[in-house]
Image (cartoon, rainbow over all chains, first blue to last red; front, side):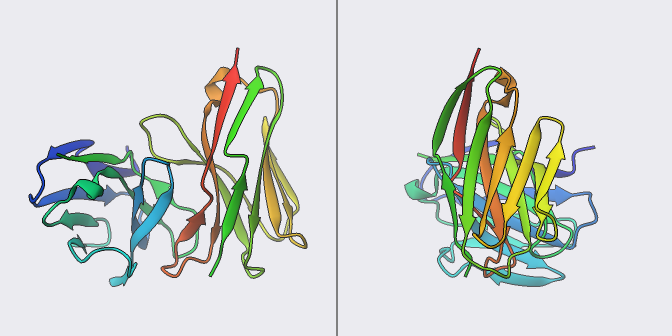
Length: 112
Length: 112
């Protein structure tokens, strides 16, 4: 029944590794997002994906790449992980751009 | 682009008291203002929202007020309960990626 689901919930990995986080929404929404929440709880947008168009936050390193096989899925791939990538990553979806967002439970990534 | 400021960053109240969290926004074209509640270990959850054609909206113990002239909106929680303890975020549309811009959050603690 979960509207926005992401896996895994926890991810511990070594520096330099490549990892992926999966996200699926069953709400029929047109738009999906990835947000990063740092230790101070600040929510920072990373990517938006709307009707097959990817909108990238230019401050996000190109080691991060979203991939959307279809409208219901937006996965996040991270290459060459760094210590500073440790954070909680949230997937979200909206009916359209600039409307209410529904969040997944988050993935706590720890890079050691 | 839109800028959202939220105050206070922390708020402690006694059970049964009221709590008020305030946000200001910069883009006068913004027309949608949601509030999110984030409990420990969970994703932000939409609890109430307001559109710019109304000045107030209530849902049981929660209300949101909007002052378009002053460009600020507030969350009011009456008869607070310990389960209201969480981090609350305000938001407004207008991110360069069609995303919501979030305030920095208010950690509300309700003491029994």
